[in-house]
Length: 606
Image 1 (tube, helix red, strand yellow):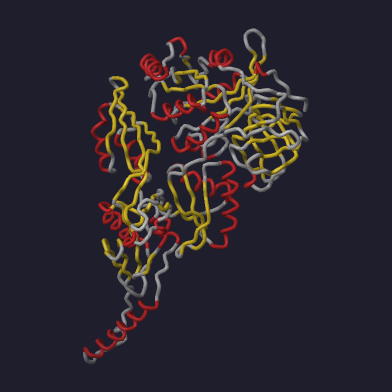
Image 2 (image 1 turned 90 degrees about the vertical axis):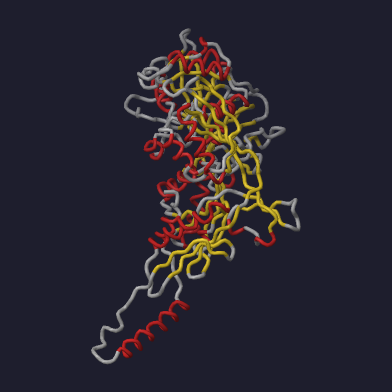
């Protein structure tokens, strides 16, 4: 475990940015192979994707950092810090964190699909941070590769020359040596003063049950040594650096790290709240003058309640969410309670895939089975007495009384869809059905058109992306950015069982769609609720107005079976007695909604 000092001009920090499924993880695998960062025996596909979930779905969820060593043609040794990034729109926050720790980016474009929406938004993030961009066309070995057309698209997008574009195949390894040379020649070495006070930017952290929180950082200025007393600027906490090191496929401890390097620090922190991604690490005895301006605070787009199936698991769930938040800084949560579901948490997510992944990770990594309420977005409600002051509403149950309400504003997004001209009509119909407005239509080439829509965020939360993929047979890419808040005719839809409100199933919906949505829920509940000894009325209501109803008939017991012969009045008497009993039972009996029913109803997007 020697002193790890590397001349700054021989360091390169870079990330890989691309649209989902353009081959980032495969190309990263080849870079690891060519630089011998992984032995042949340890090599596997998607080597940097260490979650089972990432392998199963073939997507990157977490950004991953790894150090590579490269000997140039002139015999000079270089150290590369590669940070692999996710490509899906829901994980753009992960991308922004990775970009903040780099000086350059490999812009990867699939030769068979061309530039897609997420490529553009990730590229803009990199340009904002003033990164050096190396354009690469990947999958050139495919029969359907359109290398010249894709090269023209890249030239139009970033204004580079054709010679600057590298051709590669992540699958066969073709072009990988050229990429490594380009990293040395084109990406600048990190800047920073090793003698200045320590200033290190935290870009990620993970929880290890044996060693506590492991923090990943990039040193902007100064030098960090093992045993130093360090302070986390934003939280003000002070610790001793028990172990520092660099991130190879396994963590490698070192004695000392200088400016420009990416590494990890273990200080024995056990409480996840004491680490904030984007924070600055400095020395206690010689602190830096100011914290690094990290990345902006994450803005959740979708909110949902997460409740434990058993109420006594509430504290375990809190613990699990805190540990998950360490590794996923875009997850936001706060405690809430529901009459139907007990105690749980109101969580903010970047999108529906993010919600799904968090649910899956809670189940796999922390053994927490949870119930998730109907996802919704944030609204602003304005009251008649204060029409200029908006009240933020994250859950339908926060909605003020309709008689006091002046108006509600809902968030709109700018959606960018890139597709083939054949699908323009079907995409427009889908977006118009979702209350969208076409803002712009721009032909990138004769075969590719970019459509820009203004859409309410609530309309794309559920099944928009899946429907877009199915109507375009997968030939559309989708990206979105928050736009503004606009006045909308929204109503709170309540669900009643025998007149009792089930708060977990309330939703805020547009007035035109309320009745159809209410019918959908009522129908599904009718199939799911067990029959009782009395009639159950399932109703969807807007205020006092019932907009949909289903009835579950009572379980009948044949009370006249023991009646042999005699007058009809004897049977009638028994039936009347039963009727009174049913009426009384309905007054005192309450309808329990089984957990399975909640889980099924809340999958209403099927």
